[in-house]
Amino acid sequence: MPRAFRLSIISHLAAIAVGAVAATAYLAVYSVSSQSLADYISVICAKAFGSAPDAEAPYLAENVSAMTKMMIDMGIRPSGDVDADFVAMMVPHHRGAIEMAQAELRYGRNEPLRRMAQEIIVTQLQEVTAMRLAVGQALPPSKPSADQIPPAALNDSKSDNAALVKEP
Image 1 (cartoon, one colour):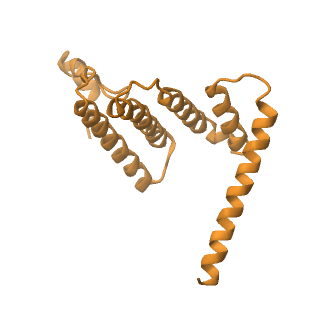
Image 2: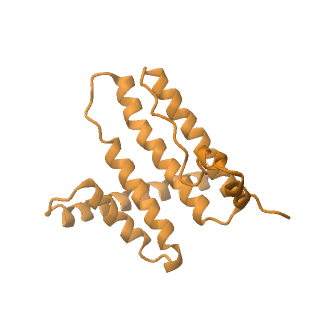
């Protein structure tokens, strides 16, 4: 076995061991008080993001919110149907990815990452639809996203539309 590979394995095992010790210590200190999963996730994220610049705070807050909601919503009561349970857990997981991608679009500046975030939104929505259809679930009614102009607003009057079109 090459030396570099052995060192890589040893360093990974050491990192896992340190993480396990840290998690155990954290749980020992904070398990005295009863906390919700949301509180637990918020505390972990707040500690991890505590050193971030203030300008990044809105982005991080949106991500913590998305991750907290995702983790809570993934905690389902098993139904006895593995496929339905898989969908019940994966839909919030995909919605979390969508919300995190939307935060990247709002705050990110890197164009390749912004394009990737757009692709994540599209593919995750498609996968949610496919999973729901695969287990016979009805799809929720369509609605415009928060940053879209509702179709009715486009057809109101020419004067309203004039405000939407910029002249060169």
